[in-house]
Structure formats: structure tokens, C-alpha cells
Image (cartoon, rainbow, N blue to C red):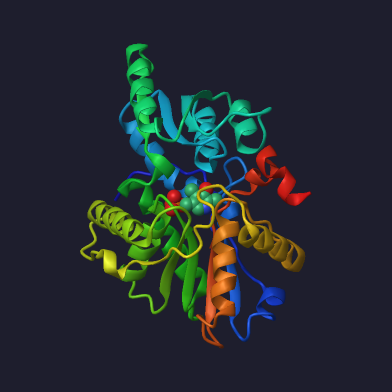
Length: 321
Ligand SMILES: *Cc1c(COP(=O)(O)O)cnc(C)c1O
């Protein structure tokens, strides 16, 4: 058992996508709506933070410190959670703060978080010095690693997998497809799949890392979570399915793949994706389907991980004009 606080709106719905499915050559598409987890516009960090915050509180934390890009969903959700628990919040964010706050950045300000701007290269170092400063100031800081992807945070997606199993009952799911970056989401899902002898497969669409690197990260997180959860199963990197064909122009760079997927899902099903993660992952899913990667008659569950506030970031405005 891992201690947990409760803030998420669960279970999140699983929705059929009949109009998209009709264009997928006999493949049935479902979406697990983890963009609706609650906590300041939702997303996958809610489930991980339920466990990580319990750990922080048990450690006597009074200030949460975390890191990410300027448009980080994880930072936005951490800032909201800190406000809700009366904790301080310091966000170490990389990326040029050009223009006025918008999207997730604007929300960070709204939740009263302190932002420390840095570069991607200096981010870990800035995190360290920020922690030292906060500690010296008596703020009882607690560092939440990138994306709350720790073994403890990954447990949030082990329980999410069990939630999904209950929802689908006896219906077969052949594939679960999700965006994967810091790895905690995929780690929890893959661990759940192994523990429950799931007949389908969990495929991570890498957002910003080579497959080999992400497979190692996911396996390590899954095994750390397994240990904390007193499970005997373990994963090897080779069992972790990752596709890294859709890295495009790099992290946060929106290309045709993302833009087209966002338009397709919006106009066909009225469903919002985001420019950084779900646009890329859904674009990857769609491309794979067109290539015949999924078989006719198979059911594919796209695990929506949220991120929609980034649609309103100034940096993507021109992409939707
Ligand atoms: C953080 C994030 C991801 C990636 O999840 P990881 O657990 O870090 O791999 C995917 N989608 C969205 C919207 C995110 O904010």
C-alpha cells in the first residue's frame, strides 16, 4: 500500500469514437478521458500527484518544488494542488518567457506559484539551488521530479489500469496507446497489464526520447512501483513497447502531424487534443492505423493524458490561425 490523497474525479469516462472509427478500416477507437481527471483542467499528473503529495505531506513538506517547460501541464497541476493544500509552490521552468503569460503559464501565476526561469540545460542545476535557497529560508521544500514520474507517482497509473479493466468488463482491448515522456504513465499501465495478465498491449508514443532510453526509464519506474505495491511481477526494458517515429521537431514543437491530429479529432468528434503530447500521440496512432499496424476488428484505446490548456499558449497561436 502506498499512501494517497484524493482529488481526482474518478473514474474518468471511456468514450467510443464512432466517427473516427468509421475512417479506420475496421479498427474500433475508444478514448479514456484522463483529460477529465479534475484538478485545474485535468490531465495525467492528477493521478500521479495523489500519491506524490501524500508522500510530501508525510515528509512534513510546506513547499512543493518541481520543474518543467514553461507550458508544463505538470507544473500547472502541481501549483493548483499546492494552493488547495495551503502549501507554497516554486516552479523551475525552462523556455523563453517571451510575451505575456498564456496557457499553462498564465494558470501557474493564477495559482500563486513562484516561477524561476531557466534554460533546459541549466534546469536540474537551478532546481538544486532553488531547493537549497528554499530550505535555508525555512520553507520545508519537497522536490517533485519531472512529471511526478517516480515509482510512487507511477502507482497512480497502476490503479488507473485497474479502473479501466473494471470499466471495460469482458470487452477486449487489443491496444492501449498513450503519449509517453517522463515515463510514469506508461510504467503504471504496463505494470498493471503484466500484473493482470492483460491480453492487449500497451504502446507508448514517445514525445521526446529515443525508444531505448524510454524503455529503460519505464521499466525502472514500473519495477520501483511494483516493489512499493508489494507485487512480485517485474518488467524488462524489452517488454516495454515504445514507438519513437514521431519525435518531429523535438519537444513542444508543433508540426503537421500534431496540427492535423488536433483538427481531425476536433472536427470529427468534438474532442480536444493538445499541441505537445496528445496531438503527437494521436497523430502517431492515426499514422500507424493508416499503415495497417492495427488489424481490422481490433479495438484501440487511446489514453488521453490531457494538456489542453497549452492550446491557448501564445506560442501556438499562429498554428491555429
Ligand atoms: C506529462 C504529460 C504526458 C507524459 O506523461 P509521462 O508520465 O510523463 O510519460 C502526456 N500527456 C500530457 C498531456 C502530459 O502533460
